[in-house]
Amino acid sequence: MQLTDLTAGRLLDGYRKGEFSPVEVTEQALERARRIQPEVNAFVRLTEEDALAGARESEARWRRGEPAGLVDGVPVTVKDLLLLRGHPTLRGSRTVPERGSWDEDAPPVARLRAHGAVFLGKTTTPEYGWKGVTDSPLTGITRNPSDPTRTAGGSSGGSAAAVALGAGPLSLGTDGGGSIRIPAAFCGIFGLKPTYGRVPLYPASAFGTLSHTGPMTRDAADAALLLDVIGTPDPRDWSALPPAPGSFTEALREGVRGLRVAYSPTLGGQVAVRPAVAAAVRRAVAALADLGAYVEEADPDFSDPVDAFHTLWFTGAARLTQSFSPRRRRLLDPGLREICAQGARASALDYLAAVDVRVNLGRRMGRFHERYDLLVTPTVPLTAFEAGAEVPRGSAHRRWTGWTPFTYPFNLTQQPAASVPVGVDGEGLPVGMQIVAARHRDDLVLRAAHALYEAGLPLSGTVAPAGD
Image (cartoon, rainbow, N blue to C red; front, side, top):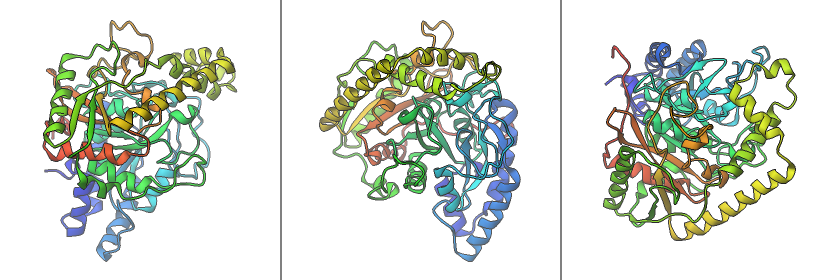
């Protein structure tokens, strides 16, 4: 067992027992990151000097028996939409200049720094995180750990690939329409979109209150640990929630016995779910029932809100680029330029009509969760498709939302939702299952996912890079 294969929880246990040190772990994680980069392109940059300096400081604290916090010495990566002090945040775009002081941390980065985390580097994103796959004019294509000819998903594809391949067990991703859950499903890791406001966000996203920040990890226990660290208020985010009422890690012990679970194979729509995906999700749902949950097949009562989502998403993109000169606009990803033009044509009444759809959807889901503690669906209806494409070959859809009908509705409602790996298809590509709870019940999502890991459900696990 290599140190790069260990979860954050196992690393911390090893530090306590003196089995290995933060310096050893960081050196191996950096070596792994360098090795995987040419094939999967998970990183914008590695912050090696800072990482090793932080690891040495952490090692000294552990020797004194005085760790700084809950994740002291654990290697972490940060999606390049989030500020990391001392390093440029280019957002996957040639329109963002590297020059500048870059002297501020995003709120979750600041929390991790206070808890002694070691920052390995910044991970790739499509330009401004606009789509469900990870490629950009700045950094090129990020590829799938299981098959580099396939996409890693997006927009947190670099984070997902890094975690899956052992380049740090913890990563910070963002999710405006599925951007944590989609790549988590495609890469075979755990990804949680917390309740909106649970993790403060600064600067505010161009996509407004659709965008969440959350953990991308090896398992649910690491995600709970990370959420305990980053899920606290920050004065820079006026919409941040107050502190959680208890520890998410402690809540994992409660399991799923007695929870009411609604299983929705297609979310009540005409979604063509691949047979291998449907079968893996059904097996995981049966496992929840075996663990003591009350499971029944049930659909929320709503129609596909994609038009409303597009209005909110496209107008956000238009606002983001409103001040761009024609020359600067030509540097954008052509697909992003296209949705910006669509968003600019929307009226205030169009926007408010989309808000009405959102409000109605949130009310319906609130009523739904009076009957059910959890909703379970596939994360996405397919496994990873060819890299470099926004939609699978032969798709009838033009935009990435055409193949992500299970994820973006829960950005509209701001609910916690996670993807847990539940198996692989016939080509060895990971399958993800989505678990959704009512707003503010992130603990229930984590409990259900953790119960599945504890039960040893066939999960896709870490993929070792060539030569290991």
